[in-house]
Image (cartoon, rainbow, N blue to C red; front, side, top):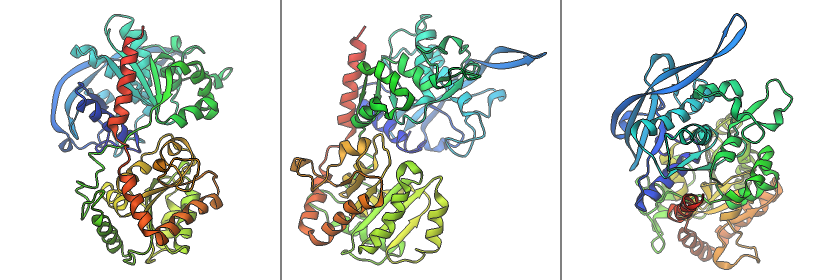
Length: 498
């Protein structure tokens, strides 16, 4: 949940959707693990409400015989506010499980993530029961929360503990499916055997293996009343096979599956009010954007120039994001007379760090910043003429929408949500009012060159047109108000269905 517990776009989505529903008059509470990396001082009105018991299990072996032992984990419940949204935070209060969610980052701590999130799913439902909450909608995200859908219907609803809710699952990335051995599911306090069937959660890729495994995301697809993913194109791609082995399950569930395009949290990303900018700007008063560009150039030691097109890229440096194309774009932009600034980190840091320290050290036109800074990302979007998003696949993508909020034209590869939000300025089949960026389809450098070169040329040679496009993209409706209204429609449809 942005900005406190954010890894990639999921945190932005949860915050934006929660705020949109709250502003529409709904009672919304976001349930989160109380990660040890969260700073309590950043949570408004943080209050310890109660401790309650959560059923949990573990595998034991005695004399060569494996058995399942059930026990109870005392769990602490806290409430507070994060960026205006009501939150509930849960963590083990007992010393035996005190390592769960402990670490200096959200994912990748020293704890067993599968065990931790299975426990969290059970704890979330047990919290509802213990506090008398019985919501109309339970909206879960990704494999980490998938067991909520399974446990809700087969345990809490079936046994009369919760009555009202319908369950929605949103899948942000089909590649992360939540593999789970049957015996590992005991971390929920429930035997996994009843779920490990082809009709429910069995991972069919493992049939005949020892052991056969479950797929938590598949289970949630089966059990949820409705399933969304984060853009219409990504949903269509998933049904055509882009969902991998889940495509079969999604096809069987296609009557309750669709893509809903994410929005941008306009409270966090607003060039008129952004506290991280040296000057504000908006359509009709764009002088502040030029000030932001010069401010970034000066701050990074680049040549200060209004004439040189500035291309920025804010990205995780992982293969999905098209790192070979980012590498190429750095050099191509410089060769074409532009400037390039990269802000990113990830598995592919070392090659970019080496370029930053050698080839482009003190370069007047290139800065490679191999880390992430939220304030700096705001300034980069505000300063940019273009924002590069060359993803190999992109379920939705927020970067291109944030770029437009700040008057930067996106340069994107046509995939997933990028295909639903960016339309090429030179595509004669696109209505003029929808044209807003530069698009390429191939995954190779030559395809990128066509879009990037046009962007640099138009920025240099067609200044009046460029200025009009900057104002045009800032007027785009990428708000969560739009996306939230679509989700509200789906919630109501779920509630009215049998």
